[in-house]
Amino acid sequence: MRIENSFIPVRGVGETTERRLWENGVTHWDEFDGSVVGSTLADRIESFIDEGRTHLERGDVSVFAEALPASSRWRCYENVSAETCFLDIETTGLSADTNDVTTVSLHQGGETKTFVRDRDLSSDRLERELTDAALLVTFNGQRFDVPFLETCFDVDIDVPHVDLMYPCKKLGLDGGLKAIERELGIDRDMPDISGRDAVRLWHEYERGDDGALETLVEYNRADTRNMEPLMEIVADRLHETVFEAAIADE
Image (cartoon, rainbow, N blue to C red; front, side, top):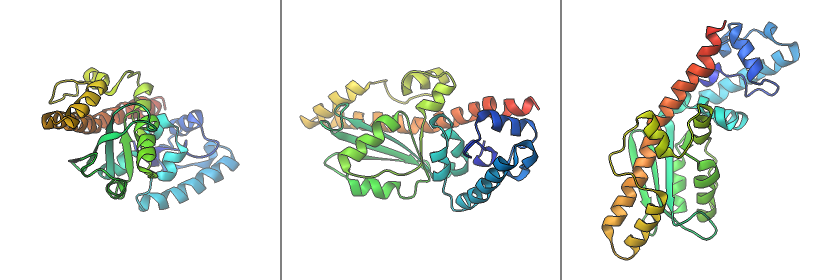
């Protein structure tokens, strides 16, 4: 499903109206027919489509991400999948005011990069790495990763953001990232460790155990890499349940 199939970013269009448009054969902006809705709303949708095309030509999905509910921002993914950055962090605790970020992993274009506290992790580096990202994907990053980074590094992360936790909930997939991975059959190449283990590994590294840092980094990288197949599965399933189901009822 692409943004061009979507109408709910328009003010006054909810899921019911969008579904009515789809059921009447208006499944893409190119097919918009104002007779399906009232004249005022039709004018608003036409303006949205005209402006939306300009944004998409620039590869900018921010206006759509801002207008979509958190559980529906997955619709932005297909348009900019090649420019999507998957992000995950590890920390020494749960409060950005009293704890530190230890590692940050970014996965984009098939490449995973990891930055480590007191080595190469800095606000400048984070800003540079996110410059070319059209979309940011995290798991629980809306409440944790992004505000943690913004507090600890005094950065403003304004990349359009899909927090996978919300579309997962829409599909009835509850629990943490690793529990959802197991349910969906997404494999990991390393033993399952927890966030508490990640804190312990960092402290062991601080006491001189370089192997502990290697384990921590690989754990962080696995979390980040595995969000890409999760995003693909979630987008495919929601496409089927939200879009194809409506078209089937035409």
